Amino acid sequence: MLAVTESNPIVIRGGLVWDAEGRTFRPGLAVRLAGGQIGALRPEMAALPGDRVIDASGCFLLPGLIDCHVHIVSSGEAGDLNRAGQEPIALRALRAATHARKTVMAGFTTVRDLGAPGQMNVHLATAIDQGLVVGPRILAAGMGVTMTGGHGHGFLAREADGPDEVRKAVREQLRAGAKAIKLFASGGVMTPGVDPKSPSFTEDELRAGVEEAHKAFRVVGAHAQATDGIKNAIRAGVDSIEHGVWLDEEAIAMMVARGTYLVATLTAPAVMAERGASEGVAPYAVEKSNLVLADHIASFRAAVRAGVRVAMGTDQGTPLNRPGENAQEIFRMAANGLTAAQAILAATKWAAELLQLPAGLIAPGRYGDLIAVRGDPLADLTTLSDPALVIAGGAVVRNELPEFSQEASP
Image (cartoon, rainbow, N blue to C red; front, side, top):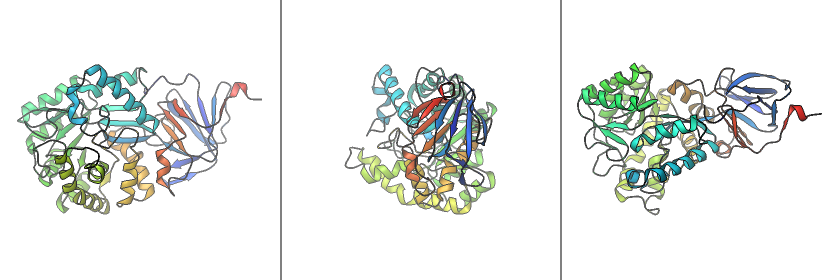
């Protein structure tokens, strides 16, 4: 659970409800939530005594949004991610709690956190589950696993070399409580001296990590920007390619054939290239962001055209990529090949399918995660950036809409 579930059922009336199959909004339906789940969805549902009734007239109801790639412990300020081990743990934990709150208040009710120092993301997930902190459901990967000197070393990844050591490192994350696993298949932007065009783990090393994760029924995301690293990760059986900057035709064909998801994180290099130099981002990170930007967008567009499965992820926590601003990735995906409806699906149904969660749909038995926005997202996706209602795990965490108790009604 995300927080303490409401003791009384919730009925939401008057809104237009997202229909994932029809890719449209349907009028005349009411949604009932009970026990942390969606209990019913039907026309003109009668509220029962004790129900908490929310009037969503004129609003558009969607499943809670899902971000498949965050680093929620980081603020997104310049240099914060790399300074992860330089701040007292208690202070960093308190900051992480505020980041979690901002994220869920923005309508993101589930996130996959792909790396944090000291496995702090796992502990934050536990605090949220226990109702100590308000935040999204977190599938935390603990620390990522990278080769010695590879991308992420020293701040959000554990170094390992050879299949046996990678296997052990993955087992360590599972022992710590990780609900997802991250492997590094190439270099990246945020690590000094590491070339994003360079592959890192071998296919055998990646396969060992994937086998351990899949044995424990955990989804595996591979940080993979370099072409050879992407192909190694796909052949090794990862569930998602994170970033996918230099996809070629062969890599795209492999992803289509195997059903590998692309979590492009278009926002991460874009904001650093656009504003990094003026807002204090390290020059090497700005330089590498400019290096990847055009190819990153071209690869995403080519993947979309070819029918690669896409799920939304921001890389929240990288410089200028702040908690609560997650919806900008949806806008970027729609500007680069997805329709508005597809962009919504990438942040709901498709993301839930990647993460293997009963989320992403407004349907009985799914998680009780809902948002309401005041404008039609199919006409203007930016309405998603300011929800009027957020329900996470059956608990109302943000509400600006009229409501009443059925017991108090005339």
